Length: 328
Image 1: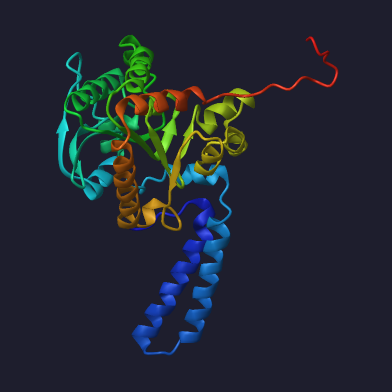
Image 2 (image 1 turned 120 degrees about the horizontal axis):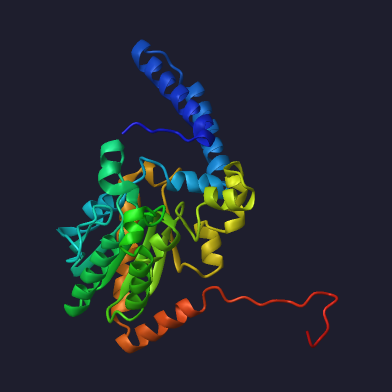
């Protein structure tokens, strides 16, 4: 797969192109260019370290949205075995934006819930750009209850800009379907693990994100609103998306500090799209470890911890202004 650089990655792309040209020229013409190659390799390492070591929130959002980034089914192919997709919510339709099914993670049978995007126009139309309808969330809940019945842990792979906001979605009660999922996931009597692998947008992400352990990839984001929408509301202009991204504290690093997520899964330098196998190995390893840990916790204790975990979110203290009286 050819690498498609983002705007801020173009200096790296240019150095890599020049380095490859030097190597090709050296091989083709049998010329010793070792010193020039080493010098360029050093410069490339320094440039990578400088750029990837100081990523802004907006740059991480761009990486999370990269069209070459591995999607949910890429992780299922590499981390799981015996994948069997299950279809339909038994009420309206099957939502192709949310492939769900049974799979083996190591020696553990799991119920896997996902969001899935497309890489081209045809795939994106089929997957609705990863934006699920109400039937997607109802299908997910039907299968989570199936997992609970057969004592299978639930794994959610989150990657969506948000639930689909169209007329049909509203007519079939998208808000209600997400709200029911929040309630029912809170009391599922099996271990639940959620991993944000790309975009974690609004209620669309949270609708399958109530879990005992919430993971996030290093360059993924998780937010109540997209930076562009936030910018349009606060500045009446989408051009302030970069400022909005900083203010929203949506990066994995910020979310870990705020205790919204429990653990960050490292990505290869430059993002998950640079090395599918490496990031899939990281994801699979962390999922197996977390499931082993959760399976040792009694269900009653697991449910109480899950409840308390989400009750703590959004807690804040309000300080009194300098001129406020003690009784105000």
